Amino acid sequence: MNPRIFSFLFLFVSLLVAAEETRSLRIMTYNIHHAEGVDGKVDYERIAAIIRKADPHIVALQEVDRETSRTQQVDQAKRLADLLNYQVVFGKALNFQGGAYGLAIMARGNIHSKCTFALPYRIGQEPRIVLEAKIELGDDWPLIQLFNAHLCHLSAETRLEQVQRMIQIIPKYTENLTLLAGDFNARPQTAPMDLLWKQGWNDCLETHDGIDYLLSSPGAKVQLKSSRIIQAPSASDHNPVFAELILNEDFK
Image (tube, rainbow, N blue to C red; front, top):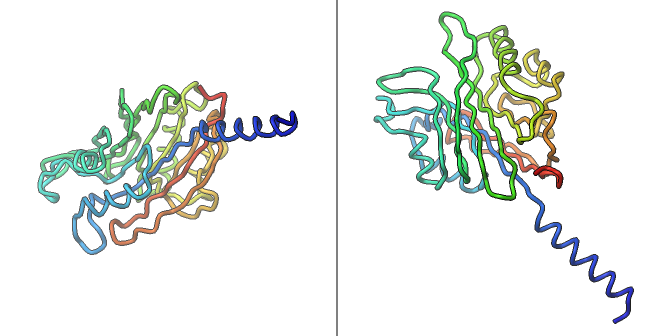
């Protein structure tokens, strides 16, 4: 064989192999409004179908009921995880109607730890938390450290205080892949978000004027491959946000 042709074929095959080995992480955040759609119906399969179609590795959920009377004592995080074959952890923000209300994180891989952190709030406001999960997707993946938050909707001042507390909680530089997701109830140009931008957090949505976010930490060795707001207006009062991130080769 002509040496030049051989060299070209070798390079071509090498590029194909490298492309196959590229690790891309699919992640979603979704405020599910306790699975109640704008039509007033609580429908778990409707929520699950939206998630299933996007096929994320990891999902951050907000406004999740656990065994409350308004949703017939269903453990919503477990119900959705069972429908989608995910592992799941739940973090309680408050007691509600005989059960609990809070956040959840679902993942394809192993969730080997979780922790909840209280955020500041005032009398008359809902208690708020950050839910942290450490996730292993497989041997070829770094440990993923995901923080899921749902910030106050009543007060910009409280939201700013909650972001200040999150900055204290969440490490910016770590060997893990650190991500922050959730419903922040704040537009990108407002003071709470400006504080995160100044800290070096990166928005995973290329164009953004909403209040639901997927952020990568300043130390995250990732590149944005694609992102979108998934149009699903009937299933909840929020649309899910989805992003696909490419992990750099040196991210072990």
